[in-house]
Image 1 (cartoon, rainbow, N blue to C red):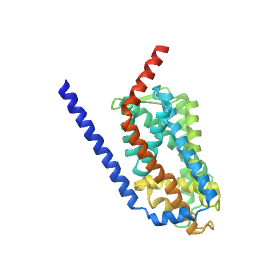
Image 2: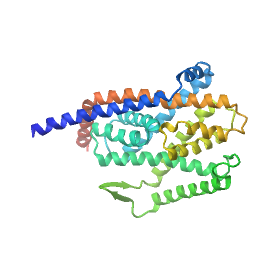
Image 3: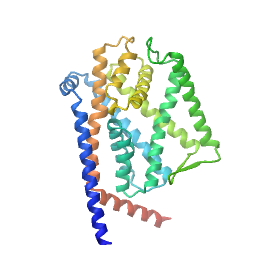
Image 4: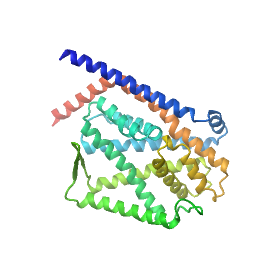
Length: 325
């Protein structure tokens, strides 16, 4: 009915405005927690070679993360343009890092992908695959580093090294079970609240591991480079993994304070000057979290403004694909 359509359009516009307002408020709250004078001093006095190299690695990491959704595109069989998929994935990643998985990883994906013409069931498969891919790399790398004792812990810390080794072995067992299920499991899907989640094949699972491990390793390389390479790279990677899971447990947006606390505690005996370490972590936050968030906000607004045209383009692509068949 015409009346109900107009009402729905008004409600949709109102929800869009409320969503944008919430995003702005969250960004303001996050920005107020940053000491901008300190940020400027760090960037102004930083080693330019390390800074430029870190910027390249940040861009590489976001591109790798975008590949998660490209894999999901192949897996789900939808026909949204690849450049749109990459843009949605990187926007969601920036919001995810700073404003939590519920806003970036899930809410933002539902919003953008639905505007581009995907059904909720397909979007569920996309974000479930993306989240799974991200943590598979974490589990594999953590399993290797923790079980081989490559992350020495300070005395009287929250866990001892034996516990960390056992955790590492458990993580490796988890990866082995996942690969076995992808290769041999007879029941390959589960339905939850009308959404069907499926196990990929073992080759696809191996690709998930490779891409995700690459992303975590690039993230660690950014911090390692900003620190002036004064600590062993794999130790920095291990500390990043520990701080990441601590950030998830604590549930602080962007893990503010958690990342720094874990790095300072674990790198205290590595002869890395504390001032240099804090400067590196601050530069990492600006380059990897805040600047991408600003760019992602601009990208989000652009996609919202062109959503109808992009959706029409996707509909035409799908029609051409069906005709070609």
